Amino acid sequence: MNNSIKLTDDVYWVGVNDKETDLFESLWPLPEGIAYNSYIIEDEKIALIDSVKINYNDTFLEKIKNVIGEKKVDYLIINHMEPDHSGSIKSLRQAYPEMEIIGNTKTMGFLEGFYNITEGTRVVKEGDQVDLGSRKLTFYLTPMVHWPETMMTFDEKDKILFAGDAFGGFSSLNGFLFDDEVNIEQYKDEIRRYYSNIIGKYGPVVHNTIKKLKEKIDKIEMIGSTHGLVWRENPMHIVEEYDKWAKQETEEGVVVVYGSMYGNTKAMAEAVARSLSENGIENIKLFDVSRKHSSFIINDIWKYNGLIIGSCTYNTGIFPPMEYLLQSLEIRNLKDRTLGIFGSYSWSGGALGRLKAFQKEVSCKPVEPVIESKFSPDSNTFEQCYELGKNAAEAVKNACEC
Ligand code: FEO
Image (cartoon, rainbow, N blue to C red; front, side, top):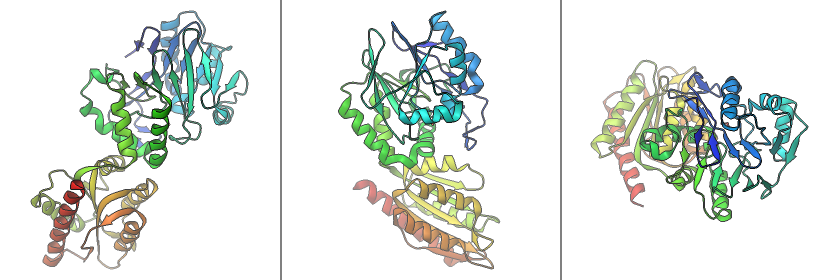
């Protein structure tokens, strides 16, 4: 998609699609790509809102020119300084030397640190406005969604909230831009995967930010994030989804994730999963932690209210890929799940101790029995696995009835 797209008479999307990057932040797989959204408002003054990753400078500048021709950009508004959005700032400054760069106090530290830019800037505070002629833009500071300098910009005329990373998602824009142009259900997993992995640690901040926006802004007609869809048919849908994820509200289902070297822990996990199914759980996700990237596992953990984790022992401790997942969940303050654990070992224990510490660390409801198997699981171990599945099924069903 090389052309700009109109949001309203004077507002255009001039973002780019990235289908070349394999790992976002060198961490997160992008099987569906990602979009870096930027918007331009052509009023008496011209304002550009956020920029794009450095790799796409040329395309980006061309798109801007396609909208405004030989006119100049008066303002660059920076809602977020992470380089997937700020990478083009230096090129923009070269193309439009008189362009004023607008951000908050914290923005300026990043601007100098990343790009050595200290001049031609304007610092704004909560509620400050810039006048473009027929409209004013109002700034709302939203620190830690998910960096300290993050803010949002509201177009008072067209009622568009330019939200930075908030309300965004993975996946490039495959010909579409607006929520009413796609089957949103197809993209929900990639949106939740983005939320749970990139923003998920800051859930309470997201919840409070949403509360503040609802108090301060009467009506939002459209939401333009820096990633993913523009929400115009039902902008509050994505706000409510983000709020739900921020509060860790879940639906009925169980994620079973295991680490297994030679199939013994896998066999226990499969027994637990079978028991869940026999006991009426329809949404079961069974993951091999070595073979499924943690971001996809975390996405489903953010969706469902049950989690059962099993791990083999490795070098007297827990299996390393499982340790990474446990730390990822601890960092994100996982809570309010039914949580079962089981471990296995041959010549030295270790995995179960770490799983017990995890169970203590997170605010989840433990489910019995806690199982530990030595060497291959025997019939007694499998009976316990069935018991764990049965008890977990009852717990998640009861939790959803509450
Ligand atoms: Fe899309 Fe936080 O950068």
